Image (cartoon, rainbow, N blue to C red):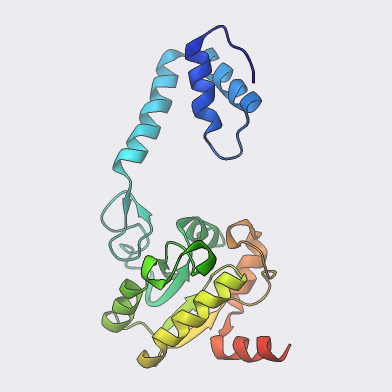
Length: 210
């Protein structure tokens, strides 16, 4: 525990250490950096963070983060509305958007099924997905969940719920290694996995015979 001559510095360091991956020494470097900046710049920094936290919304259609009632993807008439890419969180939306290969829309589940963590389908944005498929003329649902046991369990559950609608359910190709997190996959691998997506039934058969 570092000792400080200023309680104001100590309090600021404490707040920074609450951020993920920020230790006390790193927090101190950040605080010192802010001290060296013009007061107006520091105020602007604080105002931007405060405004972000206060004004951020979740898209009423896909649950992605948004500045408005509809996110920039759902409000874009140039996007292919008949294809929905299902992801775990908004970080995965960012990862896929950076590949610049997917032109459909998204649906953010807000997590994945994980009984050990007490997360079931009722805690996720499942019903709104089914409603979209029912009402919006959706032809394909692409499952772009991290290839983990929990991710595969979620895909299996969703595919069963979507079966009555008679739509195509696809999943990203296994260019993404099993156990890997989608948001940390490099853009080229992720782009190829989306471009070479396969019907979920095919992936299920291949998985059971391997």
